[in-house]
Image 1: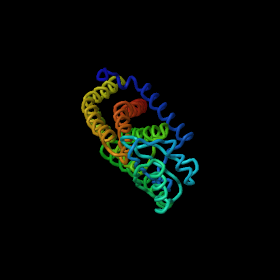
Image 2: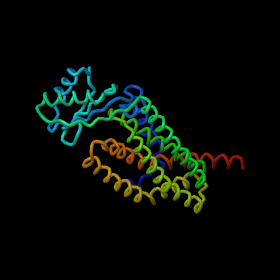
Image 3: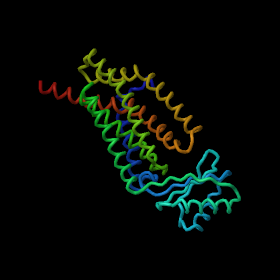
Image 4: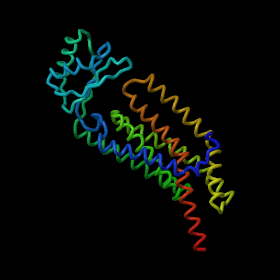
Length: 298
């Protein structure tokens, strides 16, 4: 049972699992890269509502006949009735009308098209701002945790935040889920949730450390294990509550927020895992080494 688990004693196992997951994600990023949406690579996205189940092969054939070679198209929508077509070309309103007419004629149905066009300059600006926002969030967290706690807590917290972000990005790369500007909002939400959960555990560790003043490794590890157990129910209840809301968004929400909801679910699971199984273990290992150095110098 997880409540009786020796969290510190199993730290090497948790570190090993975490490293393997990150390696898998990094390899996928090098091999497959990210499936970037037009928010970042610019171009045009057409959401073609068919009014019936999409025939992907016939749809691609129609797009090819319109001059779009090897069209990047997939099925979307709750009832698989939307064809999502992406191209690096900036499609004019006149060309969109031609696409609509061709689909009306080919499938004998009244289609509707929602278009999203992103200029290359805007795409580069969005990507740059997304990176800056994420880095600024991490810097602010380091400063806050360093002031409220100490540098060891801050470093452990930032390591787990990078783990959460890399894990989520890696999953999106492995399964080639589209990454758009809403994904960045999900990453920042994940960072906020993860640091909140981590700080709750760190606050209990600091409180117990000051009260018990452990001198030996067994005392220190027992203190950290007990601190995690004391906050475990709160951590599990929080993640389950938010997961239920995120799952509802995936099931009931529209296509526009589905990727946000998926990223949120992955990040919530990763954030809970890293807060319980990684952050505290990093702190306890570093703290024990510091304690040994002080005892030797003394």
